[in-house]
Image 1 (cartoon, rainbow, N blue to C red):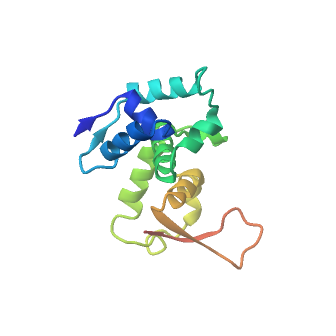
Image 2: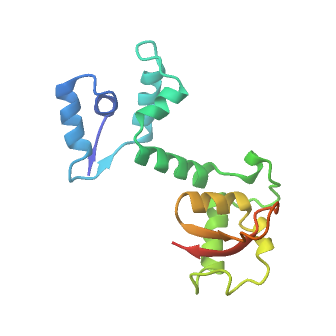
Image 3: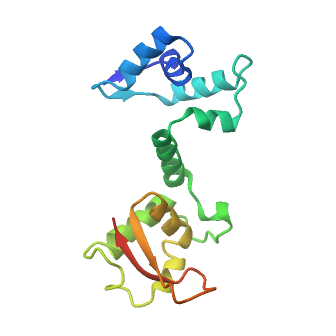
Length: 163
């Protein structure tokens, strides 16, 4: 594993010096694993928001490729996700990560389909919560089947399967 510093990361992201950007690209996309510390990330964001580059939040997100955006969003959900952020009641102190892992472990452990194990799928509103189900589907962990015959219902879930 190799660790890279802020300058290498910035050259890779900005591609503002062709020679240095090519070297940074070789390091980051090479065969060795790359360590980017939180300090390097903070320094990079600080530099990009500074006087020279003056990037705003939208510009910073645009610098990331789709894979980096996917994992940034995934880690933010699992590490900092909380039901109260989206207006859901948060009587349980478990994180989104714990709720999702518990759902997988207990609800989907023996079967790939939830329909076979749970008669009342309405309980999913509370545990793991519709917000976590939607995010698990967004990230490709599960597939949610809805009842197409029911209209104007609050997310009529028929089955959930692992992907």
